[in-house]
Length: 61
Image (cartoon, rainbow, N blue to C red; front, side, top):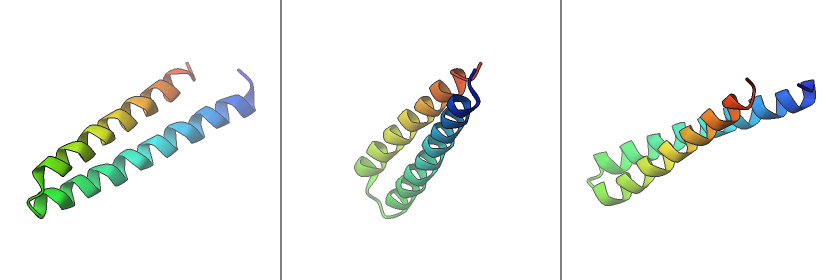
């Protein structure tokens, strides 16, 4: 695999992981505030970001 392409995949995977973490943190804050419906939306978005990160990492193999 081309080194630049592999580096781009790693970068995208890391970006998605960072996004998932930020979304999960927001969901936890919303839960603490009692807004469970919105927290659920953020948890779902975090799970999707984690899945996208897995896909990017999978392209490296």
